[in-house]
Image (cartoon, rainbow, N blue to C red; front, side):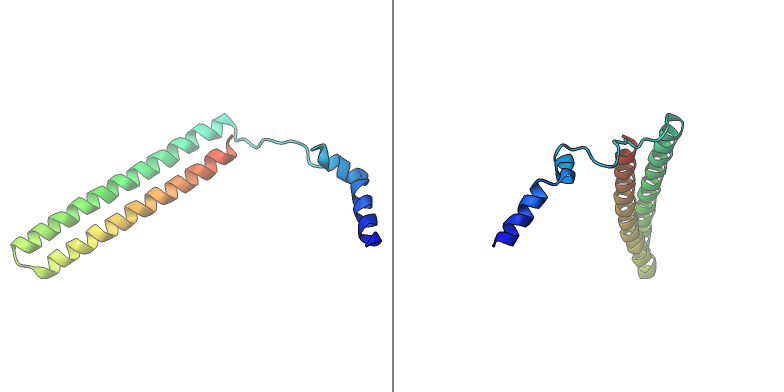
Length: 113
């Protein structure tokens, strides 16, 4: 047991441990940030890309519902089925665009202070 206590005493009196306890580490404080010349256009490009993608997903969903309506009224089952698939893929695409743009924007804002 004395070896364990001696080891704890050595760790407690180590000058390196005192330095770490004072929150003075070997790595200096650094705040990563993008320059304003890069930061603002990049945010605008990300926002326009996400907005454009979501608008196209909405248009795809509307055209899919149009295909469903036309296929149902003209008794073309294949056209209605294709419209239902396009509505489903539009929803999946919109969800993917929303999730991806949110993640990219969150990571981007974490690094840009």
